[in-house]
Length: 263
Image 1 (cartoon, one colour):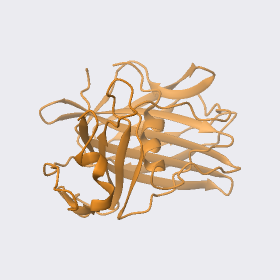
Image 2 (cartoon, one colour):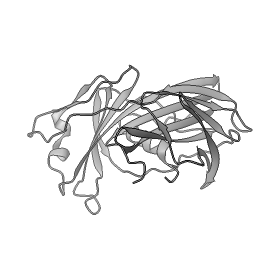
Image 3 (tube, helix red, strand yellow):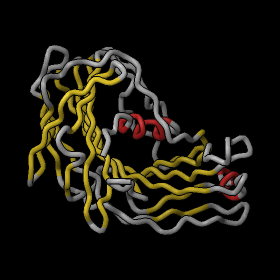
């Protein structure tokens, strides 16, 4: 499986739709994102990618919960601005059953840390993963751990009558501390080639259900030219202050539908 260079951006972009999540800071920031992929059946894999910055516009500011908004939709990301840092020769990840190493890769002038010898890490959603950065000339030693986002299912999302809200439901997490993002995507009359270009994006407390107000649903009910798509994402985040001017953030996501390991 090819390296997931844009995994972090893909996570943050939809959240930015509901809140100013791309907030600048003047200190050093490191982050590692773990995206879950399906290997078929109950087999799941993590595809991690990390990056470190001297000044980052990728501060994770939680979105406003129990809130929905209409926003533009795109499935492509752009590289974050700023100068990436050398955080050392490797980043180490530790699950209950294995240890893996992320090595630095330079692409488009950006240093990211990715798996080298394997495409993804097999794991059980809900396991806790420990991440250790030994440190390098650009970023100090750091360590954090995050519970990986648990697998879930959700009820079908239908098309209501005009003026009616939608109630979305999904299975509760095993432990508190996560949030649920829901995206109802559709094509508008301005889309190119009928591509999905707009969404109703919602962020909820991860407690099993939420409501999408009726006044936001006109585009979902009557898309032009009739293309719709639903996506749910469970998100877990852990951020630690390495020191007053350095922070380290881990994110873990589980999407439904879950992207296949080898598409």
